[in-house]
Length: 104
Image 1 (cartoon, rainbow, N blue to C red):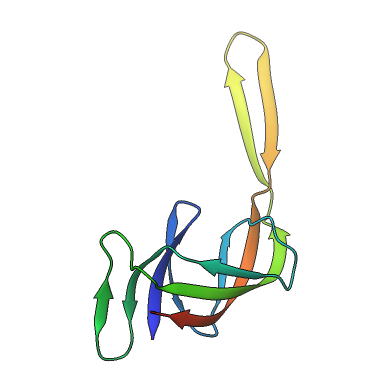
Image 2 (image 1 turned 30 degrees about the vertical axis):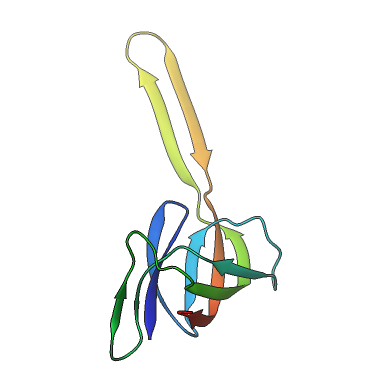
């Protein structure tokens, strides 16, 4: 059984027991999060397609890790103007463990 959920403007294909990296959620490690935006599900014998989402379906997850990715460096530069700027960014993320997929 698997489902496609939408979070943070992105879609993720998830199965029970999976560990999925998504955009940061304002939760603590060990907290439970329920995703109601289930777009598609397959239960092993039948496909369930939402238009745009499945009513009553939900995916129950648990926050496993909160972290930040490697630093990405960027540069702004304008020639002949003596302008140079270097910046960095670390994207925050959350790892969630899929506990159950309920089609309702």
